[in-house]
Image 1: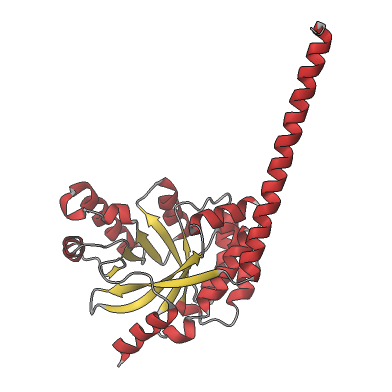
Image 2: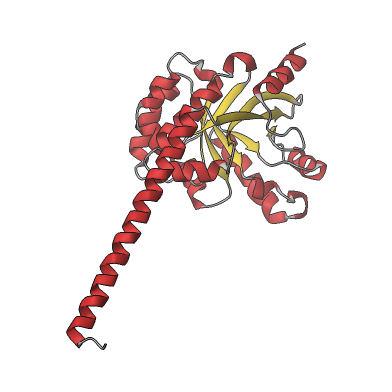
Amino acid sequence: MRLAAGQQEAVEALKEVAAAVEREWDATHEHDEMVARIRQVLTNHELSVVYQPVYSLDDEHVIGFEALARFRHGSPDEWFASAAKVGLGKELELAAIRQALEGLPRLQPAYVAVNVSPDTILCGELTRVLRGMPGGRVVLELTEHSHVADYGALIEALAPLRAASVRVAVDDAGAGFASMRHVLRLHPDLIKLDASLIRGIEDDSSKRALTSAMFVFARETDSVLIAEGVETAAELAMLRSLDIKMVQGYLFARPMLLEKAAALIDTQSA
């Protein structure tokens, strides 16, 4: 039976409404499911932390560690992005930071660097988490992917932490415009050169020129430069020739559990 034009339009409209309702239900269901999964991670302690050493090239001793979150399934980037999407980003970040800083007593005198977003710095809870910590051994790392809507507010939130000797690092420098803007606005204590800039630097004059420029910038602004992602002896030799003093990468050590990191510190202290 053929429907009249008006009836056909009504049927099509109903179909569109039904499809919209189904899409909304799917989105709500997906949101609720992700919230439940993240709550499960937090409740069941399914988040763990590993530590990758940062070395001084003066004596090839470990001077610090970058703490990296790990999950039983899925990549950290996926988990943190999903958590941010459903409003649990700060909660998940703070859980990772708390766990990472539990390693401080075992890793003395090395510092521990934790990745943190501007939103988490601005929420105020981070100040409470860091209260009583040895500020000089804590570094807050902001990445290239950290969007900063208001640098003034971020600088103000960081001020009391920096007054307590907590240091600020900008990660992924050289990877894009955002990281360079972070460097210019935040005046970080540490500038971490992105692994993409270090990879094959011995064969790339442009990478060498940018690294040299960053070295001069760091010297003029009283920042310390760290080369990330060092994987080959040739890269290391070139970094030495460019007078880079701090490095991190698989050539030296992969991320490791706290027990192994503590043993590394104990060995070089013996």
